[in-house]
Image (cartoon, rainbow, N blue to C red):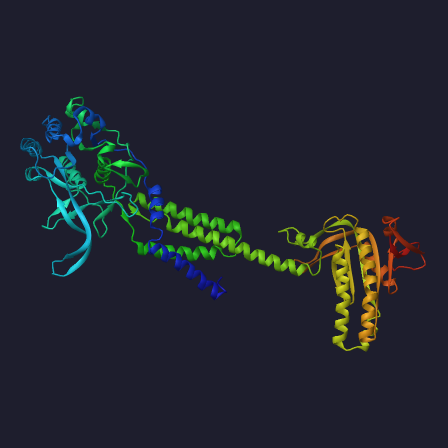
Length: 599
């Protein structure tokens, strides 16, 4: 890739496109889901938070919730504060007491809240995406402009600390962030009930101000959940509380959350710790309070820095994947994807939140894409090699040569093969009398005939040497009837040369003929040469003998050995020449036969 500027530009473009997709939010929903699953692990609550639920038992014992008087909660507050020196650190009412109702009940509730100074009651804001006027008189867009702010009735507002109970869902409908404070139109900063409760806890133990978590530009902070729906084991029914089944001392120094805890009260949300089961609002409040008390603050790392890291890692991964072996690519993919997920967990433990999906998804797509591209490229190269080799050898040889790490190594094995040599008789004399282009054309036509005869009979065309050629049968794969295949090829050459000679005689006034020799026996077949230059060929006495037979064969004649004749006994007609022809390197008595016909 380094030597190919176009490949580098393509890699940069792909990485930029994928980075842009992440930056535009196309991966947002999937990334949230993966990040939630990766980060949000249930932990143990510290036992500092207790839920007093307006649950199904309370509804059955006291009556329908919408018919409850405010005196019910007033009695609960008084009971919780019954022991003067063993009171809760905070009592949070996850309920909106908007407007006045029964005067006596309202007064009772307000007096109970004021008497002990540890009550936080809910308020809520209704937001809209609109334009608001700034301090300089200029209007600006505010996605969280407050259209309506609902507070408790006046006496309760004066008696208790107020904290907003807005649960703000992300775009995918999941609750994973918390709005720490809101600024109402009259200029007040209203803390969330979570923040107010944590501060009362800090005050109770004289721990100073709550350390506020980092927030984004809209005032939201990332909530690390301690437990999922139903994980907060310290939950008590309001009915059991009012019945005195739990002693007031049990709540000493704790944060007590009173709120809806039944399906029909419509106060539940899907949260980042569990997308499948809804969590009650008081459970969500408990998780957020727990995080503030622990000081477990998370800061979401800016997208700009993460997008830059994503782009860099994508470019590096492309360089690592492209035209690499599968093992190398897989190792790099696992290192990048797994390493990023490990880094996410490590930084999360230290208070930083990264996009868990961006890098693993990006490198996985590139990994799969490069594997596919490398496979296609290898297939094309394989086809190119196949097409090239098929000009010289049979398809069986091509498949053998393309076996990775096997046929392309130096070495060979001894097998029995049938070897054929063929030479064009009279070609040298003819070439002296014709122009070079004519010589080349005639030679090519003869060699085409030779190669067709060999390949049509499933032989391996070993080599051309000038106007001669060598072929063999029986290797690299065993062949049934390999001796007969060699003889059929030889006869096809002789018959084919007769027709070709007539054409050349008419066109150039010249003709030539083939001399062919066939022998069968053991030979070493394999890749012979050096690592940089090798030939797939056969060597040995069998090869030499076949060459000697061809060298002595007249034009239009096929010489075979006695070994060939014996192998095809009854299937051919051959005429023995005895030992009248002496072959170089052979002792007296080597019988030569002329192949006359295949029966």
